[in-house]
Image (cartoon, rainbow, N blue to C red; front, side, top):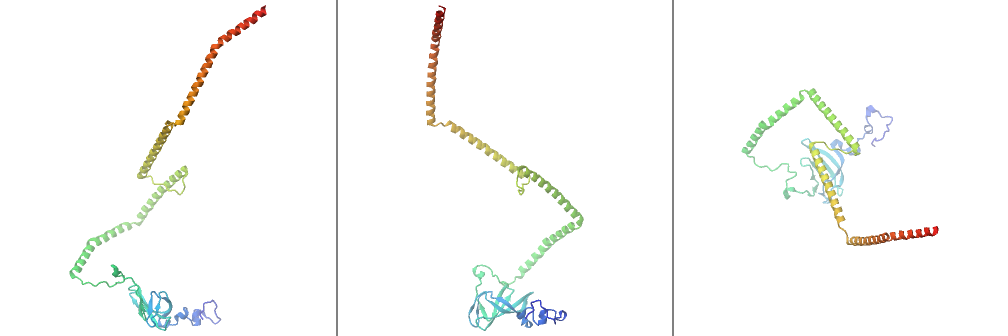
Length: 310
């Protein structure tokens, strides 16, 4: 039993045993390390493709998992090559799959055969994905010599002067780090002062016109000022055009009088003329009768005065 808990028996000695696993005589990986002395580790392996078992000839689908015996069998440069030995769950046969770092794939080496489902780009006008060797064409000595000469000329005339100029620039910039740091800090302070002044002026504008604080104002350069002036002129022309159009619409509406309003106006005019003529006649008759009335009244008064004297 593996010692996963924190119980330490009375006879446990840390200096002698080191750990509970060594005290129990067990490996930290448990039963997975039962063949570790042979260089084999039991691990969980999932089939990366469809295969057919070579013994029972049954199909085994991609993704089926096995307790495989993992073992290192070699190296491809510095990359290790591992083999996974699995037992078929449908029979008692074993099959082995190895890694292929050269072509970045898995290869069935024994006990089964892989189902070929790879799309071959060469058959469709493409290039081979796993063609690491390439087509071995015959080497032309003159072409190889010309290529070597061109490479040497390019290195001598282009690469070497470029490297020398870069080294000179690096030495010039790194010769006096204090002065360079002083210039950089001075430039940063000036830039910071300008940025603070712009932020202050932007804040005043935003407070004056009640603009949101998150609004970012544009830079006041010649292009921005010119564009703003053009927009202002355009808006002014649109306002003038709208006012003229409204004025023309009002004048047109007032000049157009419907027939019903004309008849009403003519009727009102005729009625007012009749009332004026009647008023003139009444006033004329009153003016004509007023002297006679006065005379009659005077005669009556005189008669009354004579009778009173008598």
